Amino acid sequence: MGGTPGGPIDTGQHEVEDWELLADAINSVLGAKGLQTTDELRRAIESLDHYRDLSYYERWTAATESLLVEKGVLTSGEIDEKAAELERRWSGS
Amino acid sequence: MSYRPGDRVRVLPSEKPGHVRTPGYLKGKNGWVDSLIGTFPNPEDLAYGLSGLPERHLYKVGFRQADLWDDYDGPAGDYLYAEVYEHWLEPQGGAS
Image 1 (cartoon, each protein chain N blue to C red):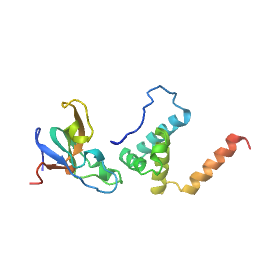
Image 2 (spheres, helix red, strand yellow):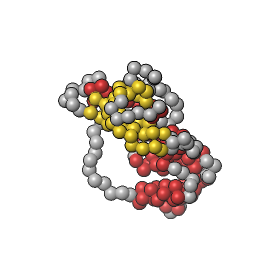
Image 3 (cartoon, rainbow over the protein chains, first blue to last red):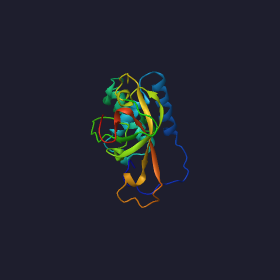
Image 4 (cartoon, chains in turn cyan, blue):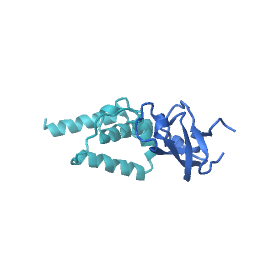
């Protein structure tokens, strides 16, 4: 990976999960609304602290969060609050 | 400066901070210009929300695999082609 050994490659097919479709859709919308570009997303992805530990769309999601916070569209507090709210709703408590 | 197909070039060994579109394993390596791909806004500036202007030439550059990897043991005729922006290239033998 990037010119260094990256280990074995899993060439098997896998189902795209709902949240991955959503991550892709959100990225398209942010691009269409001029809030995020592919070049910015690449930069944000490469800047992730845990790049190698994340899956493809986990990288997109984490990078999008950092870009939206950087641009002042959302705050980390707002994102964490919403995530906690969804967590409560899905766990039924 | 601009390059023409066949020109011998070297990728700058720059440690420019921030987002770059030149793979680390090409830095300081010798190759040749295969062709001009086109002219585009500089993605290294676009990555920070800037205009990327003036536009930069993007070249398809060829490298001998044996020149890229210390332990390369494949056929001598193995090549790697990469897209490299003009500001990452200098003529072989130093800038003229």
